Image (cartoon, rainbow, N blue to C red):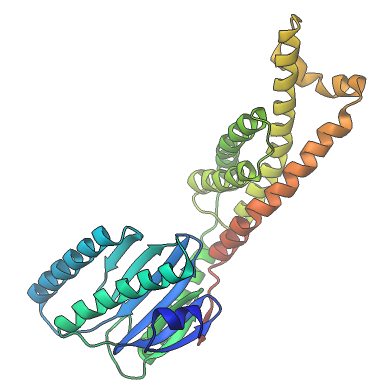
Length: 316
């Protein structure tokens, strides 16, 4: 029996990778591991006919139930009561048995409250129980009816076309990307001063560069992402040079030499050559680029997918 099947023991649960989906105590349930919350997302579909007054009272009762549950289970970090589903975020922590018991307790508490409310289950979007099928949509498991699956596909396609139609303004975008990258430059120099070369600084650099491009350029399209990456690659070189210059400035100042920071920056390479440590400079630079790739490639790939409006939808 797999981990998810143990959590939802007694239900009709299927597992695919980090996704689990099926029915548990009469309700469509999905459970999946998420690196974003370092834990798990749980979604439970429900449906019940009622007017607006009923929905207001129902949401109040459900939120009250979940708030009390959160007091008992501190790992329940967030929850949302939507129109036809409830979504829960549960942080990881503890031994596997403890995690299993925690997740089951949380799911059971929600299901029991839904049962007390007389709720049935159905499609995540409309509540219908006709022809509901599990789908993997952009890495998230969802139970949808045929009509809502088609509607979701149409919305994704419309969004994709809209994203492709949004063109950025290159010149102001480049200015924004350059300004944004300075945050990563500052972080890089600080971390280097502490004695480390951190890929996270490079990741921050490209993220802030893309945000700057989007803010000044009007949108973040494919060319904006590529230009932001090029600026980040250039600024990593600048960051490394600034870090080495700062080290030289501090060392010379400690020895009583009077040399300005900008003079040292301008003449850094002749100085490195004279001290025969040019290889060490480029060694640090190579490590920096390598760590940048490790830390930033996922962000870049996700940004490219978002810019192109790419989506995936397949039946589980």
